[in-house]
Image (cartoon, rainbow, N blue to C red):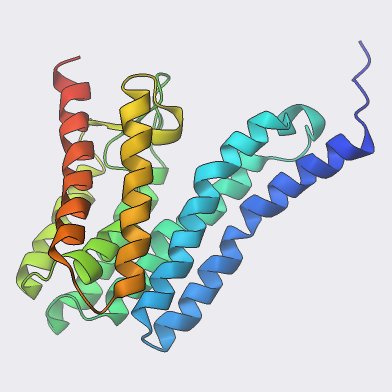
Length: 235
């Protein structure tokens, strides 16, 4: 059976999706430049841009049938490279540069972030068939966001937080995949959008801190945490 021949427009749209996905590396690189300058707000802004790109590229890929149009291109591999860069390597550098833990623990915690994340990516079934992340997904960019922009905790407490999330990668808890959730899809999407709006507002106003924004960010985190517990133990 002959393969279907796709039009130039269809191929161009499919290539544009792959390029869009890969552009997350550019936002990540710009974040690195800002981290070097210790411009935390701009650095997190570029990681936020990468988060948005990652949030919509899958939808675009399905819309333009990228797998069918370009069968010899592996969009998932591109996405994995970008995700590990923007969700692990750059946040680890961000964490190390921001001095969030006692100096003697800084390299240790950064090493734990990198190693635990690499091992998590090596697990089979990282995403379940019913579209849940099994174990805490690799979102160290958001952990760094909360530690710098949302809460101000003692540096020793931050060590505990790193240990907690590193271990949580390997605990079989079902965390929602917001863009592809099968249950509570609408409230989860709404909460994800609210979080993105709160996040960009916090970044815009930083270094000013506002209680209502801090509370909103904490409520969003609590929602996803409680939803994970419900999905794992009560559904």
